[in-house]
Image 1: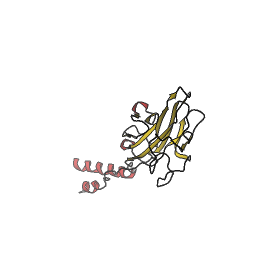
Image 2: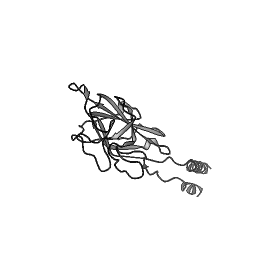
Image 3: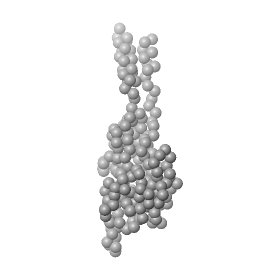
Image 4: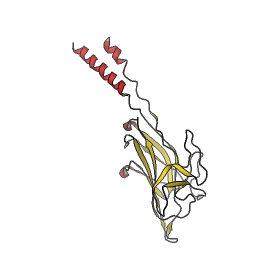
Amino acid sequence: MACGVFATTIPAEAVPVPILGLRPTGVSSGAFFANLPPQAVDPHYTLIQALGGFGPNAFVASPRPVTWVPNQPVSQWISPDGISTPLLSGLYVYRLTFDLTGLDPSTAMISGLWTADDNSRVVLNGNFGAGIVQTTTFSQFDSFSFNSGFVPGINTLDFRVGNAFFPGINLGGPSGLHVTKISGTAEPIPEPASLALLSAGLFLCARRHKT
């Protein structure tokens, strides 16, 4: 009978919860996403590497090239300068951070859509080898997803955007990033009290069966 009582203390199977901090590009803070005004600073994506004196701010790109995939109801293009002029060729890295404190990293998963001009790779927590490479052009979205490689606490998602060189102008063309429909879940870490109670119940059950 005692074992039956303790068995009732076993926590129910953990239910995944949304990961906070995963935001599309070009949207506001707060509980609900809303597109920011043209050339506004994106509060979620930081330029951690840029050329020509740009960074760390990334701006809503307006105007933007007509060849870029259109802005979405809750996501927009961002760029180093906010006006989509030709920029120096090379690498521009946009970083999004999110927090898994209180969540089990081994159960985390995230996914989304992205595109960039000219080419890009999505990298989780600096693991370049496990990054996802853009396979389409900036006129359509690619998908990305990760279900491993997460760490406790703060995690980083880097969008490494290359800007190609154009010999005629000795510069690259316009450069930008667009992330949309990004989301993720992870299971909460069980409360220590629940784990202790479960351990005590299993221990007493084991002793009962031995006697």
